Amino acid sequence: MQQLARLPNSRTDHVSFFGPKPNFIGVGHRGRNLFANCLIAIDVRTGQRLWHFQEIRHDLWDLDIPAPPLLATITREGRRVDVVAACTKIGTRRKRRPARGRVAVA
Image (cartoon, rainbow, N blue to C red; front, side, top):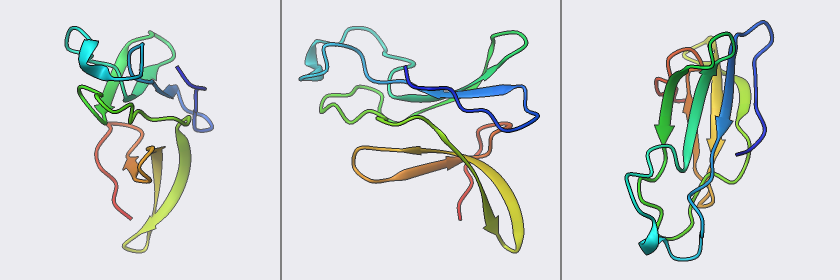
């Protein structure tokens, strides 16, 4: 698990998780690995998961999300939009709306 990230005045924590261990070759990872390699939003009042986005379902090549989530504001069609971003090991950035986890494209 990485560090938590929270927008000011928000009741939602965002956290990214690594892949299951051992992380060498993932052929031995049993089960669904549901929350491995995920960006997860958690309600701080109840501890319940609000939404999650799984970058890779079965991580054979150790391509998990290596950094904590980044909270930022981007401009989209002239409007400011809060996003939570996850940077991956292959250089992609996944941007999601913090409230519901919907895709936010800049």
